[in-house]
Image 1 (cartoon, rainbow, N blue to C red):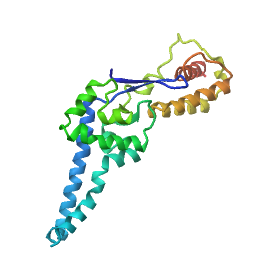
Image 2 (cartoon, helix red, strand yellow):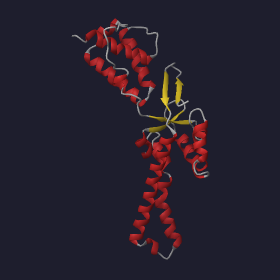
Image 3 (cartoon, rainbow, N blue to C red):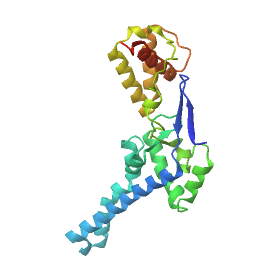
Image 4 (spheres, one colour):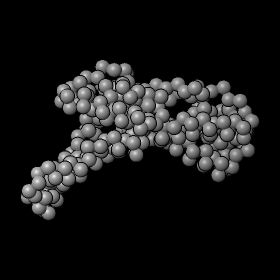
Length: 242
């Protein structure tokens, strides 16, 4: 199982690709490389200003530890303010979400961060890696405790290869009501859908689907994302030669 399958209360089904162990390890390595570089930079700066030559060792260590606090809280703060991503995760295109696919909250980010001690530092990462491999949703102990998962935000294929595939002569118009739409309407529908697709935000797609149902006065017997797909294809097929 390398995918997180979600069925929302609105019966909108979404599939998220789970982040691989390798991508998570690389993201972690990038983040802690940044932390180490920051710590070395602080040491270099203090040595240049002569802090380490001070006679009061306790004061020296206190000031040094104070300046290291941002590095200490780095994973927690980055995930909190950047929607589940650190610099390493941004580079590797992965992010932390709730197991229902929505954005995690500050408490969940904090639990994940605290459990890093058990997952990674207590057993040199062996416990965390074993948990990711063994659990259904590729969760380390921190993820299990926080009810989160790490997903891959990279698209498997370009959206043009899915929703906006070339329409063939064999296409049959399902909703002739698309004649009510303008070119501007069709472009807006594409843009809104693409935003929801890229963000993996089913609320955007559901809202767009409901708006189209009201506008066109139709009753689609299909999932919202399928409905939007057909509406766009019907529109392009209807007006492609005009």
